[in-house]
Length: 307
Image (cartoon, rainbow, N blue to C red; front, side, top):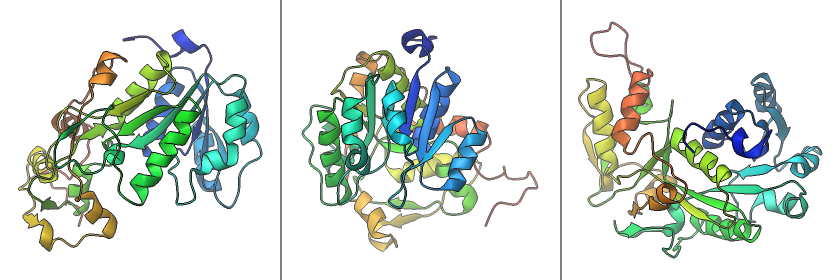
């Protein structure tokens, strides 16, 4: 696949993205650069106008309003990528368009962005795609049910680890003054750079296998406090002080995050899709992001740090 465009495989591909969030936006931009025609849904008209200026056709898809043009977009699409999260009442995209997607005449690929959270807490043990899901209550359970529904339609499921990229990383947290080194002994997890997510999606489009499940993750699970410390060193700063987990003030969502620990294998994206990660660990990823300007000003530069 190296050096080949998606157009070599798909012609003038028409891609419909449900939910143009952080990860899906990077995927859409990569495929658009390869010549794909991209239509994407957002929740507000303000976001839709911004996408139009970037050359992406935008539709409104929200609980309050659904553009009538989406049904025709589905019929016209060669590929659909879904990053809209499920809710307590199920997957909103399937609730609105399951029949249209199942009947779409040109559709050759469906991708669903999920999360490694469906594996639940494994006390630091390894998991791969053959590991049974073990979700807790709430969001992870909803994700697991949504995965099953999309797999029934022949989707490719991509289980993403902790996502980071430009403007969304520990360097940016240091610049904003929000970085914390919360320590819970034994707590580790994997990460994935958005550029590598986009590479995996493109590789799957080039080599579709309906019903496939892929862990989209880097090579190294690491404690979160180590990542913050590495980011600080890149900036020439002393790392923030360690905060014991028991003493940390956390939201219920953040506290639930610290309740899960696991190591994720990524052999399948390498062996089947031929993906070589640009950023196999957080060290390569953060180093590249620092070179692009993420993080606080270097000490001695005369530029004050953000409060």
